[in-house]
Image (cartoon, rainbow, N blue to C red; front, side, top):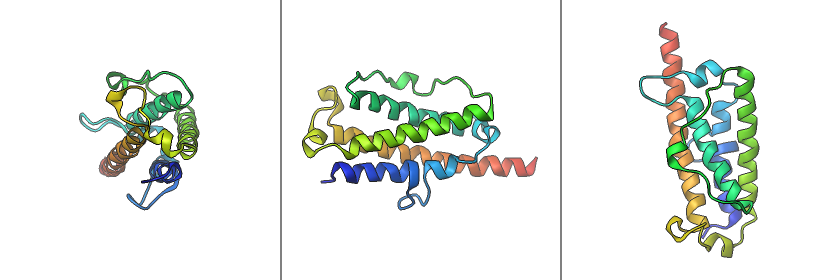
Length: 160
C-alpha cells in the first residue's frame, strides 16, 4: 500500500513537477500559456482554462475537508467559473492553483495509514485513500485533454 508520501508524490507528478506517467504535468503545460490560448474554445470542448479551474475546484474542495471543513463541492458546479478577462487574472489563478496543489500534497504527505483508511466524510465516498487516488486519476484525465487542446489550438492558429 502506498503511504501518504507516495500518494503526495504521485499527485505532485501530475500537477506540479512530474514526467513519469504523461511525460508532462499541469504546471509545465500551463505556465507561460497566454490567456488567449487558455480561453480558446474548439467546438463544444471546454477550454484549457475551464479544465484547469475544474481540477482546482476539486483540489480546493478536498483541502477544505482536510482542514476540518465540510464537503461543499458538487459536480453540477464543477465547470461554473467566472470567465477570466486579463492575463493577470489567468496568471493569478495559476499561482493560486500551484499553491493550493502544494497544500493538498502536504496534507496527503502527512496522513498516516490509519487516516488514509478512514471514511472520507460519509461511507458513500469511500476512504481518504480512494478520494486522493481519484483526484490523481481525474487530474491525468484532464491533463491529457489540455495537452491535446493546446496542440489543436496551435494548429488552428497556424492555419489562420
